[in-house]
Image 1: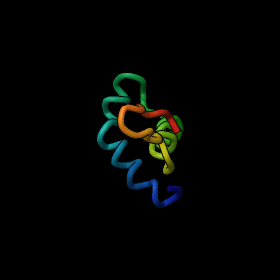
Image 2: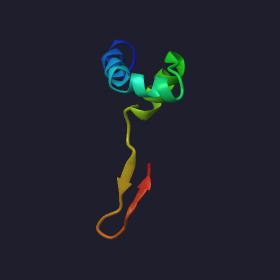
Image 3: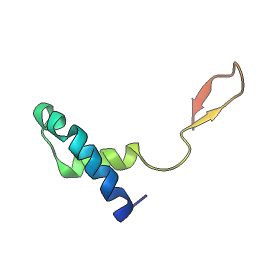
Length: 58
């Protein structure tokens, strides 16, 4: 998701966590946008290996 599609989720992130992040580390839009874009990038994260096989990062 890029451009307009990420604006709303980022604004929700900022509204929900902005005050807390600012109090601890200071809010930096560029840093927070990079973090948000990485954390919420579409795509596979994990691949299951069946029952008892555990999971591995994908």
